[in-house]
Amino acid sequence: MPGKRKRQPVSKAKAKATAKAKVKSKAKATAKAMAVEAASSPRSGSSDGSNVTPNDDGEDAVSENPASEAESAESGAASGRSGDESEPANENGTETVGPDPSSLPELEHVVPLVLPQMEMEIEEKGLEAFVSTGSTQLRQWIVESIRRLNTSHQSDMAFALSKAGSIRMATACSGTDAPVLVGKAFADAVRTCFSVRLEFEHVFSCESDPDKRGFLEAMFKHTGDVDMARLFVSTEHLAAAGPHDGQVEEHLSREECEIPADFTDLIFGFPCQDVSRLNRASENLMNQETVKNASLRTGKTFGEMMTFLDKRTSLGFPPVSCIIMENVMGLAEPPKRSGTSEHRPEHSNLDYVKQAMSARGYFMQAVVLDPLGLGWPVSRKRIYMICWPKSKLEQAGFAEDFVRSTVEEILNKLSRSSTKHLDDIILDESHPAVKDELNRSREVMLKRRAESPPKVKKNKWAEAHVKALQRQGVDWWVNNTPSEATYNRYPGLLSLTDRQLDLCKVMRVALPDPRCAIVEMSQGLRGPSSSNIPCHRASIVLPTGQQLILHRGRMVSGLEAMLLQGLHFGKTQGRLDEFSPEMLRNLAGNAMQAHSMACALLIHRAIEGQLTVAMMTKKESSCTPVDDDLFDFE
Image (cartoon, rainbow, N blue to C red; front, side, top):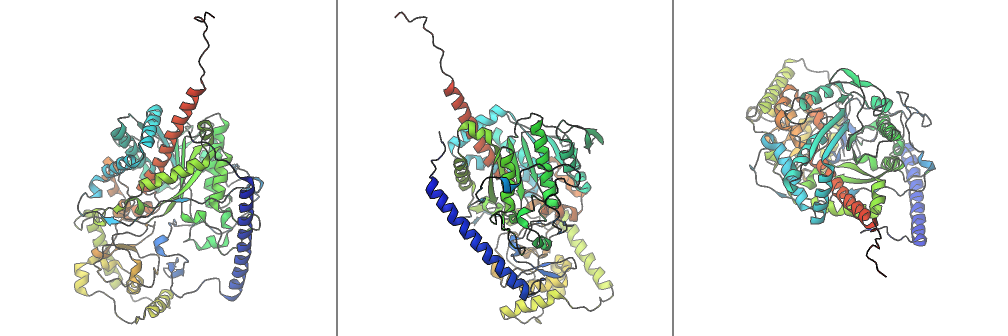
C-alpha cells in the first residue's frame, strides 16, 4: 500500500529558498520592465495587427494571445474595479468564509497536470453522425476510456461504485448542465463495463440567468429519464440559506424550499471574466487575488459556493465525496500589466482556490484538459479542479504526491491518438438548422444592400490588416470579395462582414477554402500565415463567436456549436429547436465540454476506487482476532 514519501528537509529547504529568490528576482525585473514600457508606450496597446480581438464597436482590439487559445468571456463582463480587499461581506451581506492566504503556511505554487497531446490520426468519415447518436457515442467513449485504465483501477472503481450505489449530482453555474449529461452517460457506461447497478439522481441545479433557467427547465424536466429535482436561482441564495437551514426560492415549483444536502457530487464553474485573457479590464486588477476579491464577479460566486460548503459542514454533514470546478487557463497565470505583489508574488488565482479547498478539508488536483487530446477535433483548454476529502486520503494512507502521480498515469491512459472526423460532427447542408442559417444569411445581405451607405470613418481593423499583409508581402488592395457565382453556390458567405472578408485575406483563406477546418472569425487577427489553421480541427467555441467552416463556405449554426462541445441531450435533443441560434451559441460558448468533463469525472472515480479499497483493507487489518483459550489445556 502506498505511503507518504520520506522528506529531505535540508535539500528541499535549500531548493525552495533558491526558487523563491529566483521568483522575487524575476518579479522585480518584470515590474521594472513594465514601468519602462508604460512610460514609453500608450496603454491602449499597438495596432500592428499581430493578434487582435474585436471591441464593443466591432473594431479590432489588441490581444496578447492567439485566437486558438482564446477563452470564453460572457457578454456583459464585470467591471475592472478592484474593490476593497478588507471587505468581509459580499453584495448579499453573507460573509465569504476562508483564511487569509498571508496567514497560511508556505504553499507550493500549483502547477496543473496537462493531458498529453499525441500525433493525431483522423478517423474515417461517415461512421456516425453525432447529431443522431451523440448521447450513445458519449457513453461509448466513456466505456472505452474505462477499459483503457489498469485492471486494478477498473476493479477498485467497480467495487467503490457498487458500494456507493448511486451518484447524486448537484450543479451550479454550468449553463447547459453538461455535467448532468456526462453523469447519466457515466452511470450507463458503468453498467455496461461492470454489470453494476449505479443509479443517477439530478439533485439540483443553480443558474442566475433567467433565459438559461428556462433552457434547463425545458431540457431536464419531463425527460422520460432522470429529471432535475430542483432549480435554484442564485448562488447568493445557496450561501445565504445553506443546506437545510432556511427557505429559498425554487424555480420549478415557484415556491420556497430547503436546499438539499444529500448530494455526492458538486460540479460548478465560476465566472471567468475577471481572469480571462479576452477581458481587457482584467489587466487593471491584481489578478492573482481575483478569486479572493468578493467585490468582483469571479470572487463573489466562488466565495458564495465556499460559504455554502461551510454551512453544510457546520450542520454536521460529511464532506462532499466529489467536487469538480472548471475555469479558463487564465486562472493559473500571474497578473498582467498590474505590477506584482511584493508579498508572495508566485501566487495565482489557482493557488488561492487550492488554499480555500485545503482549508475546508479537501485535497485538490488541477488538470488541464483539452478535448483535442481526448479524440475530439475541437481545441478548448480548460482547468479542471478535482477534489477529494482529505480525511479519505488520511484513512487510506495515501500521500498527496501519490495521488498526483496516479492522476498523471490516468491522464496518459485516457489520451487519444486519433480524433473523430469533423464532418461527422457538423450538420449536412440539408439539415433544417443549416437551411435556416443560410436563409438568414441571404436576408442579412439584402438588408445591407437596401440600407443607405454608412458614413465614412477610419477603421482601426483596416489599418491593422494592412500592416499584417505588409509583413506577408501582400498588397491590401488585392480583391478578395467572392463573385456572384460563388455567393450563389455558397450563400453562407453572404453573412460575412467587410472586416471578416478582409480578415480572410490576411489569414490566406480562400472563399470557399478546400481545407476541412473551422476557424473563429470574431477574435480578429489569428496570425501572419495560413499555417496557423490546422486541418480537421475546430477552434474554440465562444459565446458570441462567429466560426467559419472553410470547406462548407458558411458559418457554424447554433446547433452545431452545441455539437462541437460534445453536447447531446438524448431524448430531449429535439427541444433545442425551441431556442434561437444565438441562444444556443451563447450556451455552447459557456458550457463545459462533455469529453473533458467525462475525463475529470473518470479521474475522480478511479482515485475514489483506490481510496475505498485501501480504507477497507486497513480497517480489516486493524481488526485483531479475539483471544479464546477455551481449548487451551496448558
